[in-house]
Image (cartoon, rainbow, N blue to C red; front, side, top):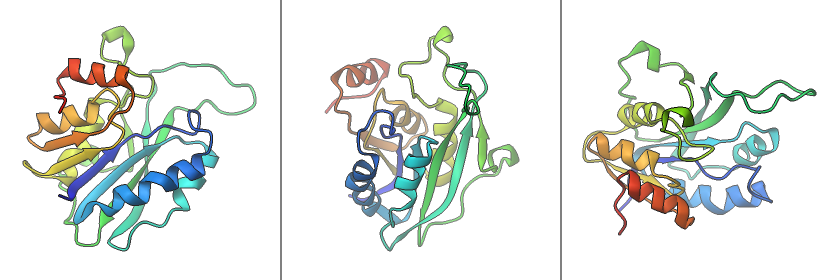
Length: 194
């Protein structure tokens, strides 16, 4: 069964030796399984080599790369580089199927290409992974591009944020995670293994 929404956050170039080969190995196949009336949101690192690797991939003929969205956050510190600006955002590739309907996005503050939402904060107990996305951004993208009962797929499920957000909104969701520690966290958070 093809899915209505691909929502994922694959490993970044900081964790993959050959980001070009990695991106080419999975993205075309994943996009090929999105319905022609579906959508895809693919978070990627905002590193020049990673942006180039992903932007050089042609999507399947039934999909179109529409925009590079930005997720911006101001609540993390990290290290202070001396030779560049401090990075407080990540890119998100936004694809739509050739027969996809208009986005269901009635709230003006959710219509911007830059989504300003704080990152999950470990001091508040809601951060399970270094690159974890906020439940709020997951919920927004799911609400904007699917309806109750639609299928949402995450091939890099990690600790289950996108799967849990989809289930909470009445969507069917499934994902894949190869790291047993991350999968165990996802199960503890409420994902069902099977």
